[in-house]
Each structure stands twice: as C-alpha cells, then as structure tokens.
Amino acid sequence: MRVLFVTWAVSSHYNPVVPLGWALRAAGHEVLVASHPSFAPTITRAGLPALAAGPDYDLDAEIRAEHAVGRWWAARTPEEIQRHNRDLVGLQAARHSSDAMAGDVVSFARSWRPDLVIFEPTAFAGPLVARMLAVPAVRHLWCPDFTAGLGQLERRLLGPLCTRFGLAEIGVLGDVTLDPCPPCLAAADGTRRLPIRYIPYNGPAVLPGWLADPPPRRRVCVTWGSSLSSYGGAGRIAHVPGVVRALADFDVEVVVAVPESQREMFAGGPPNVRSIGPVPLNLLLPSCDAIIHQGGGGTLMTAMVCGLPQLIVPTMPDQIFDAERLETTGAGRYLPGGENVTEAEVAREMAVILGDSGYRRAARQLQAEALAMPAPAAVVRQLEQIARGHARGRSR
Image (tube, rainbow, N blue to C red; front, side, top):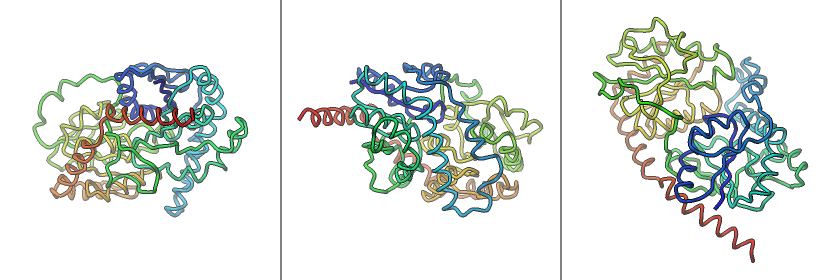
C-alpha cells in the first residue's frame, strides 16, 4: 500500500502524525510526506521520506498579518472568537493549499497513485488529492477537534480551489478521522472517528543527564511553546516570567522548558528554578507532578499521556477550546485572562492543583484511558481495510 501524508510546514502539525508513519513503514507500506521544500529536513529527521511541493510559504507572517498583533478578540464573545479563528485557520490553509502546494502534490500523486491519503486537519491539499484520485482521505487529529467546524465553511473558503481543479467540493473532514482523544476529551458530533493512541514525538532528542536522576522534590514544568512568539512577537509571552515567579514560594522544583531564543526572558528567576531551555517534553514530563502551559495541543496531549494535572493559561481561541475541554475531565484547571493573568492568580490556582489529590487521580484516569487506545500499529490494520474496501468498491 502507498500512503501519502500531507502537512503544513509546522512541526506542531507534523510531529503528531509521525508515529503512524513509522507504523506504516514497519508494516511494509510505502510512505511519503508532502510539505514545503524548507520543511523537508524536519520530515527526514523523523525517519520518513519527504516530497517537496510548491514554493516555500511563510505561514507565521501570514498569521501575524491576519491577527495584526492587535487584540481583535478583546471585545468579542466566545462564539465570535471561535468563528473568527476557524475562518482564519481555514483561510490560511486554503491559501496554503491553492497557491503553494496543491499543483505539485496533485501532479505527483497522479503518477505515484497512493492508495490512501492521510492529512493533518489544516492541510487541505490532502483531501483535495484524495478526491482527485478517488482514494480514501483520512484526517489525523492531534488534540481536541477544534477544526470540525471547517466543514461548514468549505464552500466559502475553498471555492476557488474547487474551481481550479473542477470539483464541486473537496471534503475537508475526510472520509474518516483518527482521533487521539479519549471519549471524555473527544468531540461527539457524528463524525466518523477511529481511536488512535497519542504517541508524543518532539523531534530528535538526547536525554539530559540531570533527568536520569529522580527529582529531590515535586517538580513543576512551565512551558509556552513557540507559536505565540512566532505569530505575535515577544509581547505575546511577556507575562510568562511572571508565571514562573508565581511559583517562588512553593516547595517545588521548577523546570522552564522554552526555546533557546526565549532563555534571556527568564534571567534572574526564583531560586527554585532548576533549568531553563529546550527540553523534550516527552522526556521531561514523566518526572513532573504538574505542568503550566498555554494550551497548545501537543503540550496538552503529552501531559495527558504522562498523567499530569495541568494548569492552562490560554491566549488564542484554539487554546481556550483545548483548556475548556481538558477542564471538563477534572484533570486540570483553566485560568482565563491570557496575557493579563497575574502572579497571584497563578499561585492561587497552582495551590489548588497541588493541594487537591483529586486532580492527580483524574489525570491518572485520563492517562489510563489514553494508553488503552489502539496503538498506531493496530490502526494500520484498520487503514488497510479501508483502502481495500475502497478499492473493491471502485472495481465493481
């Protein structure tokens, strides 16, 4: 079986699908991952072959322009914010697909003839190729399904792309969705979903020596990803050193996991900070007792499979969505306010999480449900059946 993956040139979109790519190759199937040329090294470092498609595309600049760094959502209702963000994501993906990748990916796929196309939710060139070649399209989520509403926006967002390729519609939700969220975290909207275990992958990594030893006391991770600073500048994460300072009076060891470019922001932090810098979360979090973060999907899901209570301080609408979903499971708390959150608020919320064993129990229960989901190797067999069933249907 030949399987074509399609992804934006963003690690947080690509990394969660990598374990399935490994599983498919281990089962003897051919795999290619299509994205922009500059992203090819990231793809190949994960051990998967890359297909460079189209010119490079500056997604960060496009999103910065759309968000205008100004605070569009400051005076909006939650419903308006969600509608706007879905439109924004869809518009970026449509522009990305139609103007940059679609032509090259379709041209290649016509000669390579994949049996299956797997795409992350905002890589619309994926379902486009599947529709053009009449093969199954599989949408691979990496967190709670914030993008499900894009199906209602397809005609408005992707009309020009459909016209370009002579299609009435593309089918942005695919034929089936691989959902890594346990039932209590997943959406229940009638979409055809197959469960798949979330396997954290943060890129090539070496275990830091200090992580080989048990921590001397409870450990709390503080991390804020890289998207906020990329999309909105350093001002978007200016409040994060205050989050770290809020833990100064706690009897915990704090690990601040941030990119090298952000290390200077945390100079002169409290004495209970153990380390500041890039640390792969899948290696760090098993040694932690709690995590504070911005609500990014990869961070939320990695903390979930490590069984950690989470305090989420979201800024972007998709992060708010993730935070609200996580809070319903009892495995964490959601602190509104985003960039305006105060140290006192963070300290109060962390005191609740660290002092109430119920959050730890709920996090462990969520972890157990996540680890009970089918591993990628088991999902491969289901994908084989989908491809065979589709092929039989076409041959009749």
